[in-house]
Image (cartoon, rainbow, N blue to C red; front, side, top):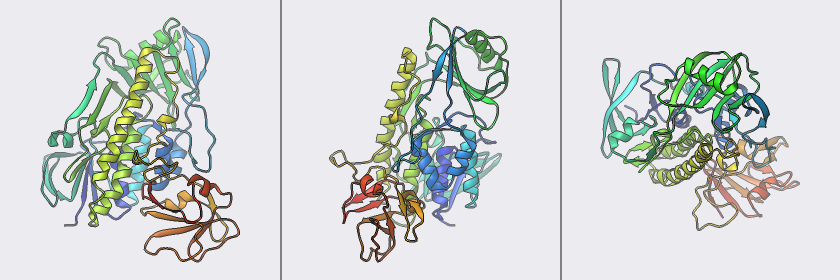
Length: 473
């Protein structure tokens, strides 16, 4: 039997991790207890840093084609139009940040694109397959899976629990899920049609006296549906009739007829963080490790980043170097704690009825996530995100730093080097116009790479496979 990695859970986190391993030729199985693929919009906000991950994974074009920019929201109070709102103002791309704006695509659409890409590597999600139990020893994990009435025992080098907030993996390990659930606040989220509304816009309907207490309807790309969000009062059931009652009450209109409720859920503020993300050969990622309020669109994105951080480290371990695995928890748990704070603060604003409760700033884009040592005070140091920059290749064709980084490897940038480059690594000299070099080189035509990396001639910067600085000297 080949050594393999077993992933429990085929949401965005599990799929991203499977893709990271499969493209490195690591045998991987990805299972999900659901009998059919998720069909709802749930995590429909894709942050700029996640778009950069998707660029590296080869799915960005498909995601951009299937999705849309964040909609303009038309606000109505007491049935009267009071103005337009955007969650964020559009930002112009820069050489260092090519995708500065969030993107909207229903989670089911994102998952389908990731599954298609995974299939390119010959890996398919095994639906209707439940992880019942597992044990681990010094060399691997033995797991019991069930498919229908059949039971299977599998051996894996590592097991990853990407199996959601109710994670079987986390519960089996007995890892505490620290935080709180607020039973007093319930929200209804769902996907529904409302053909009387112009699908090019989003809508906020509320009473004139309580402008922050109302319902939001955001258009979902690729169809006629809106994602519906409303406070759920009393013990109302999540049905189309209840949604219709809310629309009638808050909009003051009688012509909006809802139909095609394809997904609905009752959401409670559940803000939790796993006490640890690793137990021997078993790891937690995504909602199994941290659950967020939907405010700020952080949950799905943070899970994808977990997988992107863990994938190359697991691959290294499968090739015999386990030294990186401990850094997964130390890096990602700190990020999850910070992101939970951002989501919670936005939720508090919403509950308090703050005027800017719907606004989203740079702190939600995940571009500023860093794994740097707090003692490092430089402008760009080990652990920071590696910026992009436009360049020209040796033949004079346009190319970007992100093109050099794309793939499974680390990348060494040698600024101003004209001699021989180190061997055994993806190394490039970054030279100024009018200069050539002995090895592979790129030309920093407009100086953006030198500027973004605060580099001088002789600066050497190694970029990790997940697009963060490994070291500079």
